[in-house]
Structures are given as structure tokens and as C-alpha cells.
Amino acid sequence: MEKRNLRVVKWLGTTPAVGVCTFCDRLFNVPMTALKKVSDAQESLRVQFTEHKCKRPDAS
Ligand SMILES: [Zn+2]
Image 1: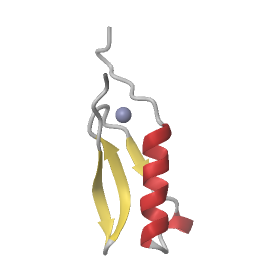
Image 2: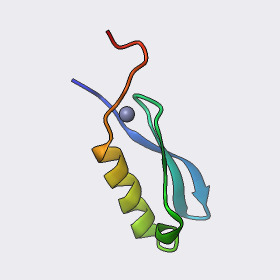
Image 3: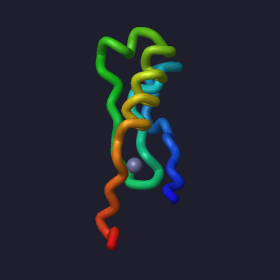
Image 4: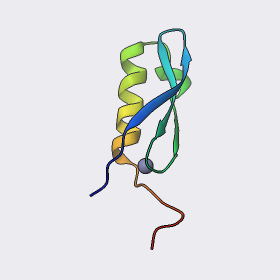
């Protein structure tokens, strides 16, 4: 079972701008259009995080 979390690594004021998956270190960038509203930015990150597939370089 995968255990992964989304962590915000870059903020623009109170708006999350860049998130990272703690499992595979994949970065997620919030598009400019979603940065205008905190809720849009959060939703964008959440959707990207939920839909990505973790890739581990050392997966066997
Ligand atoms: Zn991941």
C-alpha cells in the first residue's frame, strides 16, 4: 500500500503555489489562473496530487 502525502513547499502569501508528493518527490505547480484564489489553488494541487501516479526510481 502506498502511503503518500501532499506537502506545500512554496507559498505566495497564504496561497499554496507548489506542492510535492512526499512519496515520490513529484512537484505540482498551481497554474497562474488558479493562484488568484486560495481555494482554487488548494483544489488544483489536490486534484493533481490525487491523479498522479507515484514513480519510484528504485522500485523493483
Ligand atoms: Zn507521488
